[in-house]
Length: 582
Image (cartoon, rainbow, N blue to C red; front, side, top):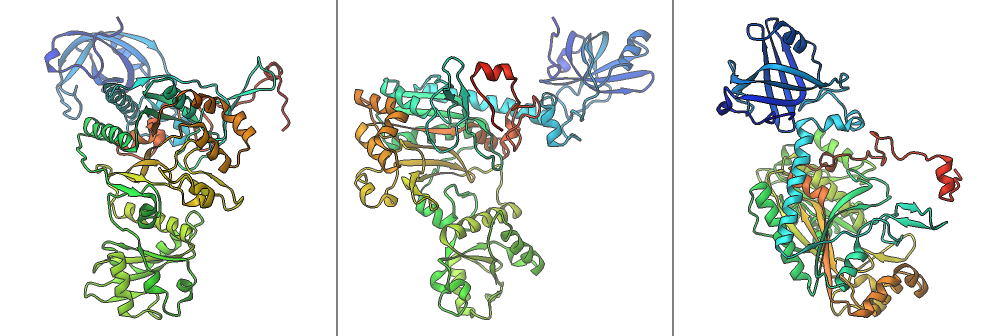
């Protein structure tokens, strides 16, 4: 038996008990006549004592030779600690060691294995197995496990069945690039790794498994934007014989359950907002509603003077920043520089100070009088002491720019509190999006999303006006789940494929198996998928998903710990009938 107790288990009630502990050496302190050693495992830390009055010279010398991260086993007696430490659960006791065994020595780690480490992110990712020993990473992984267990508990209690679907599937066009896997036994042919189990969960509905879920790895070979991973985990769910309200009710329940069980927070309100409303009020389809600063459209109150920047703009829109009239001119200039960065792309920013006496001072006073500026304040909801920030330009671009500014200002003002949770359903998305470069439509969600009832005919006359029977669950400005009611008949699915540019032959080649299945009594069905990595991070009060993944990739999609991806040798290429042309 390597241990009778964990390193976080012993208390005053264990005093005078004989114990065996095993773990890693966290720290040693040698005072000559006494040596203290902190031993650590997943459960906590315990102080060991080697005392010259009670310890043999050989054992004392052995303790002095211990290095950081040595794996050791000790046997001894629990005693009361003379200098108590109320900051740790084991701080009132220590173990007087009678026997010490070094189970494995360790090289000096490349960074300190402590809560506050001296290791940079790249170094810690290279030695991730050491980083996991640190409490912040360890606790994040334990937290992820807890969330996952509660998800399974809730869904199982709702009669969902967990079903595994294949990882080696057929490559189908679903938006991002597939990762492909060559088949040795089928020369010149390839599997793909799933971007999601979409078609398989629909086939499970055809098979009568009317409540399915799976916590599943998904893969997308896409350029990694901030905090994305090429492999990620979904809570994938599907239900048969349901309408949109049924699905929203079940997964609103899941979110409430997790917030209560994990965070001890009761959230009753899950507001609904249409896609068009979200874009108009917040400039994106996943708005953070923990704070205000809703957009105020200003075309009617700005495009009547000789200020051509506004007159030529498709949209003039502003936000009222609470209390920001205290910003100096230098601070406002820095804000203007911020929106002009390439990542945001604005050409500039107009501002208006709302003074405490009810007067206004704007960067465009030359063109607008006090009566005009009062209308700006009314449109944006600005109050005395606020600062109105105004952007203008092409509608979609300026909304995205002002949305980025809104989030940046909220962060600076401390309005995005990670202890507050504000969920929101965004509904009535467009079914199709127009690619301005090609002039072709593509599915906003995926090709299997059903149009809203009664709107199918609009596909022939006004495809851009068709609304999808789709919904996203947003939490604190992050999309944590998205889904839709699916198409469940062959004719409608064929119509959808046609409008997405598939010939009948292409549709048959890519998705014939699904369309064939629809001929055998497919029930009405729909579902949703939660991004587990993102959900766990938000529930954990953070936004960086890498901190909650055991072995993440870097921004280039590389695992720097195992040095992957990597070349394979010529013999493997030959077996797979592959030839490189680089």
